[in-house]
Length: 252
Ligand code: XBP
Ligand code: MG
Image (cartoon, rainbow, N blue to C red; front, side, top):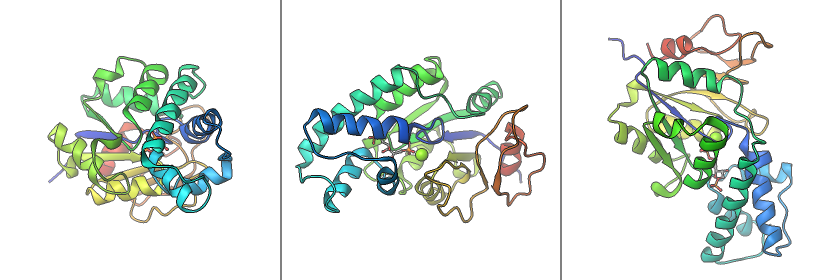
């Protein structure tokens, strides 16, 4: 029996846009500076910290490993609130574009009547800023679910956010494909029983994607350099860039 592609669930950070290095990281540093804290997360350090998902959890981890001065959970929450405001401002400046092929695939899937949803670890306010300024506010309605942040108790790599999004949409794992950019994202999708396509970035290239359904450098676009294909277990052809038909084939 053909299961078919009924629903696409999108990760946000690193998948829709390269928000980590030039968005979240910069915003954390602005919040640390504003609070008079003697801590800066450079590009390499942030790469180490990315193994912990969630901004508040990431700060707690840095404290535990002796990077940041010890502060209470309440202080972490306050600092994270300021970081989110800084992040919203950076996004509003329009400096972080969508990754190649994201808009093309979103438009194609929407036109095809495929259910679209977000399943992310980031804070709802940060997600809203990216939708408004990078995607366009019509996407607040085009996404049938925006599952984000603390709405579930356990963040990725736990399955919870994907399970929650599917429950809201009334879809099953065999009808749903996850789009991710990181090892933690893939683990989360896998734990929820989903097939998964991974578009890596510099921070996530070397991570483990054993069992993922397609691993590529990006979704890519027609008329630009062909994408790099790292894993192609379904032996998809014509992979100069990823199309909706490729995603449907993975689910067939
Ligand atoms: C990525 C994350 C987030 C962001 C920071 O999530 O782990 O924590 O780095 O965002 P995903 P917050 O790739 O699943 O979207 O500070 O708002 O947590
Ligand atoms: Mg991600």
